[in-house]
Structure formats: C-alpha cells, structure tokens
View 1 (cartoon, rainbow, N blue to C red):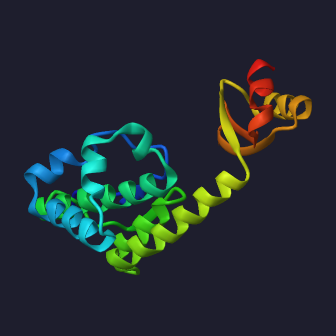
View 2 (cartoon, rainbow, N blue to C red):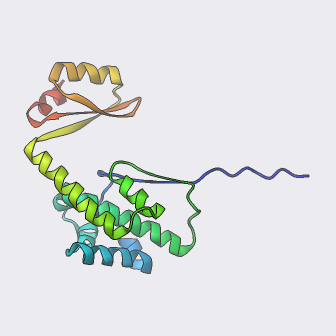
View 3 (cartoon, one colour):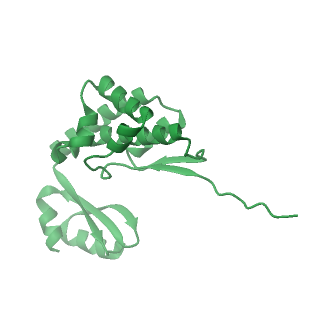
Amino acid sequence: MGLVPKMGKTAYIFPGQGAQTIGMGLDFYNTSAAARSVYDMADDVLGRNISALCFEGPADELTRTANVQLALLVTSIAILRAAREAGTLPKADFLAGHSLGEYTALVASGALEFEDALKLVVTRSSLMEASARANPGGMLALIGADREMAEKICNITGMEISNLNSPQQVVISGPKDIIESAIET
C-alpha cells in the first residue's frame, strides 16, 4: 500500500500600497477577457480611467494614495480573475492582504462585491491622503537594522518605529521636518 503525499494548504496574499509599478496588469488586460472586464468595470464605477493610470502612469499620479490604492485593488482582482479564467489557480484555503490588500482578500473570498470595495477604497484612500496633507510625514526603511538599532535612532531623532518587517528591516516614521535628521543619524 503506497503512501499518498499530503498536500499543503494554499493561501492567496494580496499586496498593499508600495507594490505598484507603471504597466501593472497590462499583459493581463491584453490577454484576458476577465481581466479586461475588471478594468473596464472599475473605470465605469469610478467615472475615470484608472486602467490608463495603471498602464501608462505618470508615476507621480500613480503613487498618490488616492490613486494607488484603487490601482492595486483593481490590478489584483484583474490578475486573480484572469488566473481563474485560465483554470490555472488552485482553490484558496486562506486569503489575506497587507493593509489595502485586505480589501482585495475580501473581494476574492466573496465577502465583499468588487464594486463595493471600489467605493470603500475611494473613501479610505481619500481620508488617508487628507490626513497625510494635514500631518506631513514620512517613513524610512532601515534595511540591515534590527529593532534595537531602530530604537536608538528613534530616541535620538524623535521618530517612531512603525513596522517590524523582518529581523533585519525596521521601518520608522515621523514628521517631515525630522526625517533628514533620521537619515543622517
């Protein structure tokens, strides 16, 4: 009697803001009716051409919070639906997302309709952008720095630890006027 290999679980993990690049999703748009449908629906629901922003930029417009969150949601769902259309995607046992990616995971699970997610992300990204304008700041990824080193830099500069990405990458954040001091430190 042979042993049947035990199969692992499949997880879909969707990205958050920062994963964007000009041209994202264009190959899927050009080769998949399902992906094209997602971009076309998003353009229609939003009343603007988010697909062109994904495919052509410009980079400064794509990276604006009010745009990039929508662009990533749309692109992630377009890729997911293109993979489902092609029949190449195993069923997910788990769905997760980083920050904005949580909305994509909710759509992928069927817990949230795509059109509703678009509307929620419009509100989310607008509020985040308004907050950033009212409180100018920034973030620095300290690559090669452990938490102890990051804490020392924060104590000297007044920055705060905001993300523990890995044992050797800590992100600090703070007001715009002290970021240069943190870079020098």
